[in-house]
Amino acid sequence: MATVSGAADASSATVTGEEAAGYAREALEKGRERGWIGDFRYKVYETEKGTAVVFVSGKDAAANTRRFFFAATAVFIAGSLVVLLLVILISKRAVRPAAESYEKQKQFITNANHELKTPLTLIRTNLDILESEAGASEWLDDIRDETRLMTDLVDRLVTLARMDEESDKLEMRSFDLSDACSETILAFSSSISGRGNTLTVQIPPGVPYTGNEASIRQLVSILMDNAVKYCDPGGTICAVLQAGKHPVLTIDNTYSAVRHLELSHLFDRFYRSDRARTSGNGFGVGLSIAKAITEKHHSEISVQNVRNHIIRFQVRF
Image 1 (cartoon, helix red, strand yellow):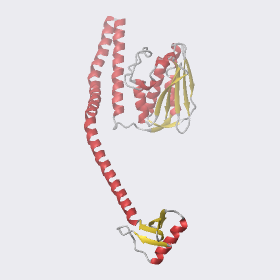
Image 2 (image 1 turned 90 degrees about the vertical axis):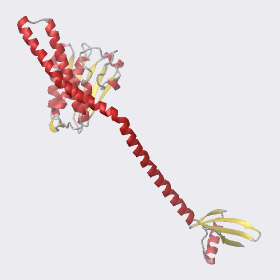
Image 3 (image 1 turned 90 degrees about the horizontal axis):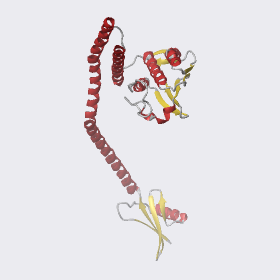
Image 4 (image 1 turned 30 degrees about the vertical axis):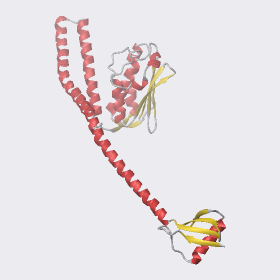
């Protein structure tokens, strides 16, 4: 004989006798000691009078679970918002000195451009006058070369400062990337042959691209200038442009000291490797400008060590 009862607490539910009997039969047919039937949780156990089946309504338990879940979610969201607000307030205060220092640095570079250009121009003018009166000399040539280098450095620093300006938007137009690359690269051919090196160019005609043509020419010029400066004597320089939806420009040059370079720092401003990059008269800002140009065009620039004797710069437009 089986008896059916409901727990006498807030989780109990009122059912008719026929419903209780039906639930009991279904529970016994399952052959398990406990389980669920609909919204009721049951347990079967033996008593002196026979088999008893106790049912407890699970609606309140499910409702409590839902309420707990919603409460936990609300607490989590509120806590996250509070933490986010604190992070924003603290980060602004922590970053403010660095941001102000960065802005002052850019302002200093811009001001230095105006302050240095005038005396540099006067130095070049006075050199020309002095040379016309006293004649040419190696000392005047050295002064003129150093003045030219100083002017170039000031120009590059200003270029970097302007590249950092979010408001400084480049004018983007469609142009022939093949012509821009070919003309810029071939302008270095005489310098390359004069050093006893070999230039190989593989550029398909008519590759279109939308960007700032002057900046792209400057980018290619920086990479070629770097390749010429750091190419081994009697080495080769190879420039390849791959057409496609996103053209790829690759410039390789033989450089036996490439294994000593910290490639991850080559695009850092004023980076010079003491062990390898000791030749040339660069300032360590050219590749930084190249990276800034690619970022302005939403492109990517990378550098690789190929077979420990070739350094490869690759631009994915």
